[in-house]
Image (cartoon, rainbow, N blue to C red; front, side, top):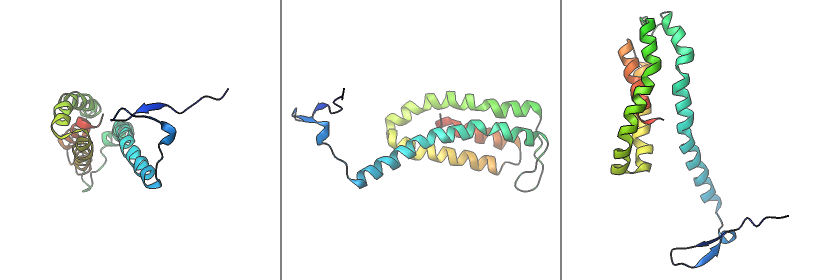
Length: 146
């Protein structure tokens, strides 16, 4: 039995039309694909942020050097904070996200606030020469990536 996949809809004037009447240009499909990829990129970035601690903490605990060649002293208690500070950032970010989206809109929040926080957080982690930079970087990343 073949199902009818076309649905009757109403436009703003109340006139009925069928979904089979809707067509997309190749340009429109490309824009939709790029928008979908950008929107789902947040999930990938969230996975990178959460997965960062698994390979990074053992090497940080052994005293691996920073980008300047100096060792970053890290104790077990500090590594625990690095792993768990994401939850604090998520809590604070959830409280801040609503008012920010109301003020500047969802699209602008996603494009600018989330992107800037993510980039700033990883830059702080990249240039970290002590654990404070790592803490702040992890916190900033997860304020709006969740």
